[in-house]
Amino acid sequence: MWKGIALGTALAGLSAFALSADAQRGGQPQDPFNGQWGVMETVLSPEAAADDVSRMADALAKLPPQRPGIVDTYVLSASFWNEPVFENEAKEAAAILGRRFDATDRTIVLSLGRGPTLARTLPIATPNNFNAALGRIGKIIDPKEDLVVVFFTSHGSPDGSVALQEKGRMAGALRALQLRTALQQSNIKTKLVIVSACFSGHFIMPFSDPDTMVLTAAAADKTSFGCEPSRDWTYFGDALFNHAMRGGEPALQAFVAAREIITKWEGTLHDNWAALSAAQRSQQQEPQPSNPQQNSGDNAIAVIAKAESYGNAVSCAGHLSFALDRARTGRPLKGLADIAALTSAQAAAQNRATTEGTARGRSSQDTAKAVVVAATTALQLYPAQTTNIVANATNCMAP
Image 1 (spheres, rainbow, N blue to C red):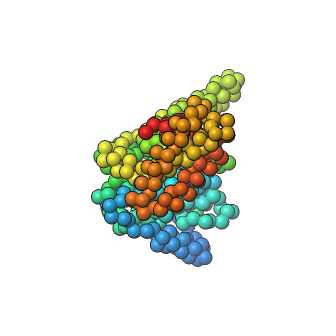
Image 2 (image 1 turned 90 degrees about the vertical axis):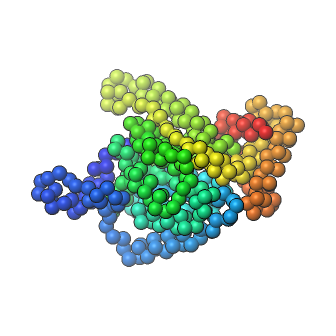
Image 3 (image 1 turned 45 degrees about the vertical axis):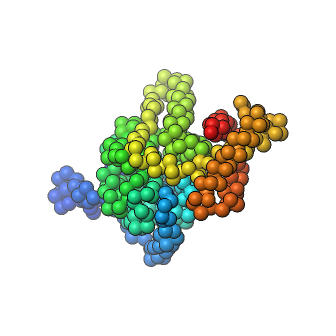
């Protein structure tokens, strides 16, 4: 299913009071925010408002200070549409990014909820809460050495806006220039910006600078797929986080791998459409490739490599532990039957992880536990992601 929407649809029912007097008398609708980032919303109940303030204050207070001499990473992940697929993607992506960048305790997740009848468990993804997270992170980091990762997932519009909607209560949109301004105002320099939405390629040009890596689910003129509420991930989130980023490859290589996965999935989607009768095809738009985009500044690439070195070493040690166990029990992964080579590669990855962890204040026991978690995750994912797990282990064999 395409993730694109018309922004007017998202704003229906909430926008009338925000129009100018001239517009209400029959003129053209005016932007009530004059190009600034904002939403139109109805007020929460006193209890819900108090709960949200408490959750947000707790999330901000828990962020630890940055450590001089270490490339610390802070992650902000947000679901901007109140359906389960988007909240799940924001939560799970945050967990995977937290492990990759050793930022589990430096992560904030915001959400517009899972639906009107389901209780909230996360701070609400309002512009104020989003900016509060950026502002707090900006005060903590050393912009000369630290990294900030911003990820959000929602529907997108052809004009490049990413929708914010909590059905019946809140509607608005975020545009690339508004995000860029918020990051600049927060004194955040080096950043990884990831946008999962239709037409998100509009975020490429505004973030094409030496200090930014930006990854988007689609080109500026393309939709993306997989936004059905019953899904756990969108196509882009599934491919990038759930598949590619669980391995030990650098972020840019993970994006390339994710794009290949998406191309395969979209090819199947098109084949299914082509197999329909002519009458059925006439009633459905032909699926077009989403064409995910990226731009990576040289400074950002260097900082990101340092930030993810520990997490990637842990991931490799875990994948190789899984591959070694399979080889020892006579069930080797394809192309990974050499026990001696696997033992050597796993030891090297383990040593690299321990060394990187020590520099970050992680004990050898902490690192060993993290490697076990990575190995267990590979074991659990193997039945559903066989090709991907084998590829991750194979890539980790290189020195």
